[in-house]
Length: 344
Image 1 (cartoon, rainbow, N blue to C red):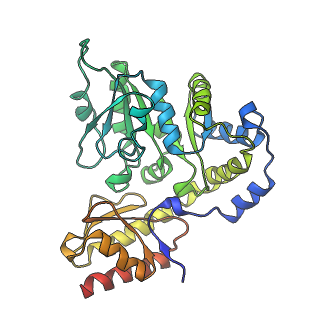
Image 2 (image 1 turned 180 degrees about the horizontal axis):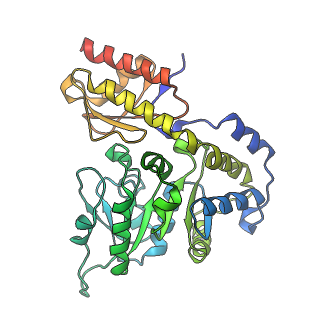
Image 3 (image 1 turned 30 degrees about the vertical axis):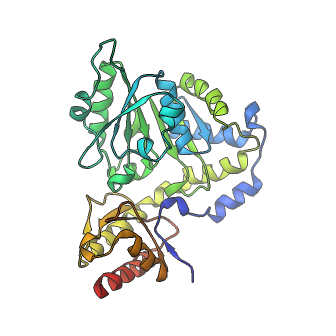
C-alpha cells in the first residue's frame, strides 16, 4: 500500500512532462555558460520576477547563503525571525561561511514588522557589530505557512533602504504566497535587493532553486556559487524540469491551499487537537498535547495506518499538501487521524 506522504512538499516526484523534458533537454557545459536550457531558465525566471538576471543553484540553502554573503561583510549582523529557515535549518552556514552573526527576533506569527526590526538595529558605535542585512521569509515554513502581506514587506524594504540596510527574501514558497495574496511574484518581491525561490517544493521540480536580482548581483553570485561547489556541467537536464515547474505548476497551487484548509477544518473538530496559527497556504501545524500522545508516538501510529507526517516539537505536528496528494488522500488521512485520537 502506498503511503499518503504529508511530511513535506519536498517529497513530490517530477511530473511526466518534466521527465520528458529532462530526457530531451539540449545541454552544454554550464561552467562555461554554454548550457542553453539553463540559460533559458535563468532568462525566464528573471522575466517572471521583473529582474535583470537570475542564477540557477542546486538548493535553496545555497541560494540563501550566496545572497547573504554578497550583502554582508564578516563580523556584521543579520536580522531574522527566530523561527526563520536560514537561522534554524541551514547548518549555521551564514556564520560558518559568510562570517556574520544572526540577530534573531521572536515573533508571534513568524512575520517581522518594521517595529520589530527597528529596535534590533545596532547603533553606529565602533564596538557594535553593524546591521547590514534583513532576511524575511514568505511563506514562513515554521509559522505554519504564514503569508506576509505586500504592504508589510514594502514598508520594511523602504525603511531599511533609508538606513542603508539590504533586504533579502527567502522566497522558497513565494509562489504560494502570491497565490494566497492574489498578486504576481514580480509585484510582491519588487523592493527586495535579492530573492531566492525554489523550483522544487510546491512547483514539483526534482531539484533546484533560483536567485534573482540585478545583473551586477548575479555576476558576483556566479563565482561564489562555484566556490561553494555549485558549478555544474550539463545541468540542462535539471533546468528542463525547472522550466516546466516555473511555467505550469504555479497555476495549480490553489488546489494545495484548498486541501490544507479542508484538513485544518477537520483537524480543529477532533478531540485534543488545536490548529496553530492560521492556515493560509499549504502548511498545517497543529498541537496534539491534549490527546495524551507525543509527536513521536503520533507519527508512528499514523505510519502504521499508511500516513507519513512529522513532528516539529514534542507537541506540534506539521503536514503539507502538494500535487502528489489528492483531495481523497487528504480526506483519508483525516479519517485516520480521527480514528487515532478518538480511540485515544
